[in-house]
Image (cartoon, rainbow, N blue to C red; front, side, top):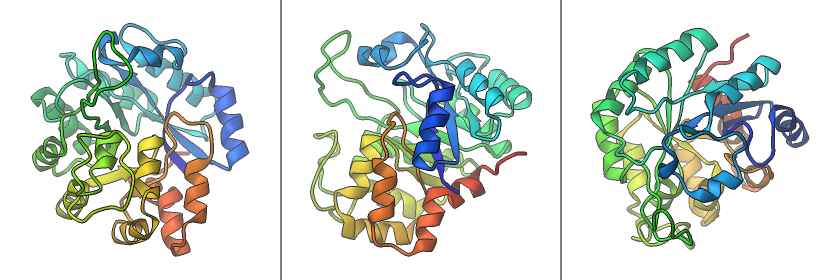
Length: 289
């Protein structure tokens, strides 16, 4: 079974029917559908070209995830993350879990520190309900976008991630995005380049965090994840071997098949490949009948 742990409804002109057609075409059995809440000024204006049906409160409203799940109950797992600034965030999360069967808190993608105390309360609730939290870590690097902000950042740094892991040892966290995967290497480029290339250098903050915190998992989706695992294939074989139980396959905003093609091409034991492509996701979030 192949499980895509990171995607969104109504993205890149893909409504619920087109998502399922795309999944069938690429042999993907189940997809986790994530919401993405937050104020409009928190996300890059380019996203408005890609998300259909965004609102002032959400680039990817949860209601589209629910609609997809209702039509294709066996193909989707529901993920939802309320804005932690909302004083009713935990109540909303609890209602989503009890009403719609939400199994994942995601996507956490806010222009605030991951270890904000309001966020910690939400994570601890998720830990009590055995709900993993999928977060987006991105550093404030200059981009081609000049307005309304010169750069976009989310969550803080890997040190912020570590503080969060320490404060919430009972909660499982799944890391994702540019800052997270750039920190796989100790080359010092994570705060200088969005997608660093070249051999992975010993001393990466991500590797240190994975070794220290058993509640940290990795989502290989997006350009960031694909770049992180493909920049140094020989290192990746060792990385997959050491952390084979905590790496999850995903595509995020991409309708191509490059992540799966890479997973099928790399020379690793078939048992490890199966874990990454689906078994780890099933252990973390069992499918419901």
